[in-house]
Image 1 (cartoon, rainbow, N blue to C red):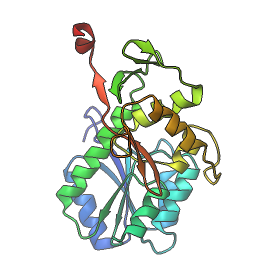
Image 2 (image 1 turned 60 degrees about the horizontal axis):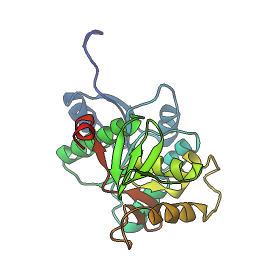
Image 3 (image 1 turned 120 degrees about the vertical axis):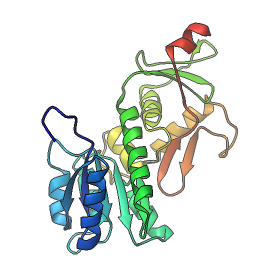
Length: 246
């Protein structure tokens, strides 16, 4: 590939099974990705925290020296926000919860089809690209949220939110459809250490629910993800043409 040609998304693949890792690298490269391979946890952690970083990390949970869970935990503690797809043979609920709790964005259990892996990678990359767009106007839960002006209205009337309530709403909106763990919210919204225990998040979520549509867990736009955190569902971007017509 010449320097003038556009490069595909950069992936860090962490997998200690040499046969699987070789086939994964070859397949992902054939799909247009730029792939770096790490076969040990310590090496993976060093690469994951190195700037300028990767667009996405495919991380095996079971590694010979440092588990994928620990790699991810330390990387998140170091401020790495790269999307992570956990790739593992451990398919039970407990391990899935552990993966999400330390900051995984998705979870794929071995054995898997490479087409599904690529599909999940593409979804995570697309969500990350959408989340990186700072501006835009959205409708969610009966609210109109303008991320450019930081205005929240309902039926044309301003909705009075505290600074932290708005910051939490904007954070969940930019991550719409994705689970935000309590640890991520503490780190990214409250700027607190991830080990801090607090019910403040719940109080702010409830305050936001009070001004949004929905009268129960099944209908609230901000959904609880049991034992993990929260995610926002049902947000729709308002295009300029829609604004002009309304």
